[in-house]
Image 1 (cartoon, one colour):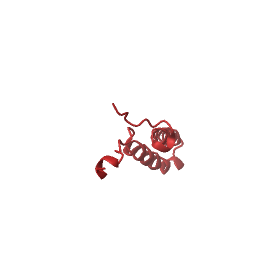
Image 2: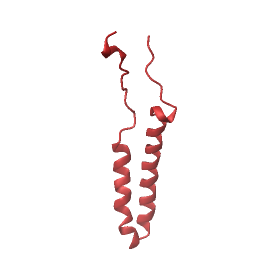
Image 3: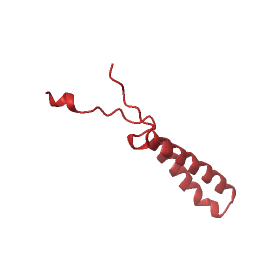
Length: 74
């Protein structure tokens, strides 16, 4: 049997890592001035939850997250 046919393809994840890292980084940037102005806390928390949502979605649509559906063979 050909070894290249035995390997399972990697289809990737529909949630890119930048959807997690960018809001997470923005959240960290807003935490610093939040000590001077409390309105920044709200913005930081919102971006934190956006990053958390995408991290959870990325996990759920991974093979470990049980919602992963591999491409079916036709």
